[in-house]
Length: 239
Image (tube, rainbow, N blue to C red; front, top):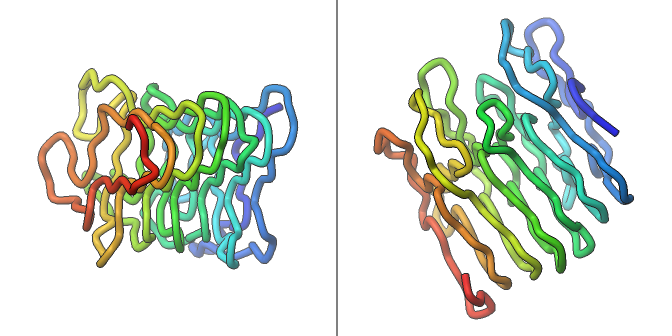
């Protein structure tokens, strides 16, 4: 199954991004089998152009989520959560939530144009509660995006990534450079969580591997700072 190229919770009409999202979740995943949400973002012309990825926006009621994975192993890549290419505020309460039974979920990709852009969430970009399997988060823009030569601030969420689960979790990966200011391959950009007590990554429980990411900056060393880059509490183990 494939879900791509949709406007979920929003639409672009007469130059305006409209709020269409009174429902709790944009996409609710609860089942086995292969599921792909999104695709390659090749830009194109016009502020609404995205091609294969989805715009998932305005799910901003308490506990509402752009994509909620109750069970299953979807691949989620090339989407805009809570924002658009210009960095507009179309925020969700949570952008992506992995519940206890989420298993082998992939968020983003090492291929340029297949990372997700997450911004303007009320609380957390990625909220991780999974208890098993192998989850991978790589190649995403979380709290920031690069558009028209500018790094944009997509705050003001409390946290970029919040982990309170077990299982095997990989955040980032090998950074092999490439061309262009924004090139990153497997690592994530996690930036602009700069309000008081706002954190790029929070590890409450679990043993994630966090490597090859840009946290509060980019390859050029620009100030895209967080209040705290990574915080680990007493339950974090073998991080």
